[in-house]
Image (cartoon, rainbow, N blue to C red):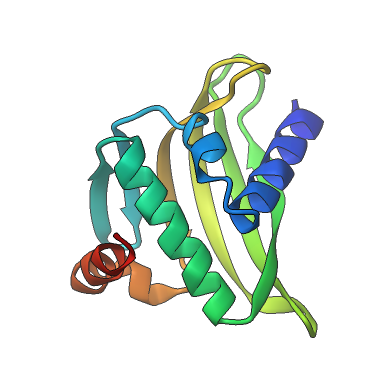
Length: 143
């Protein structure tokens, strides 16, 4: 399962930078609960999710990121659940960034359609996304 999920998150990173938001949206179970630091939100539908994905990509590009590099830190043991602890790092023209985000993904589905059912960010490389007022402003600006 490790190799499968590593390849899946590699695909997610490439799809985000290729702006394949519709393809990505099919891999989320909606409504999606998301915890961004101290801010909790519920992404209600695919159009709202696409706005969030677009805004995230735009913020990364503005920071100089050319790609995201996922690294699985831990996974639940088989039969114990479907949680994945993932670290996202930015790739820039200078190389791998020293900054990162840590996310716990709750997954369901199968190999043909793995679905994210919940996300908890325990560390944000862009802390501004964890502030409710800033996050709402950033998302509204992308619509």
